[in-house]
Image (tube, rainbow, N blue to C red; front, side, top):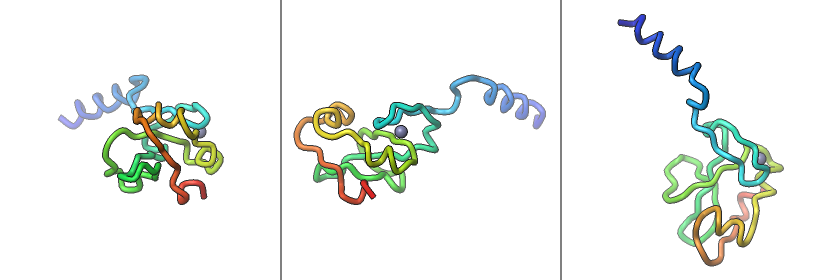
Length: 96
Ligand SMILES: [Zn+2]
């Protein structure tokens, strides 16, 4: 029983692309979703960090890197990322 479980785990870890991967909206690097910072839109149209993973709606991801947080695109590109028209602003807390 436990032997089978181990075999399944080995198979899964060998399977390429098993870990969910997301693309950084700033630099385009692809990384494990768990290592990325998730960004969401709050009710006021501000891009904020999805700290507890409970943010609703469509999320975007950036590298856990201050350079990428500062380089988050603005304006139309951001509207495309979040598939939302209208004014999207980056919350002041995001660009540390
Ligand atoms: Zn990045």
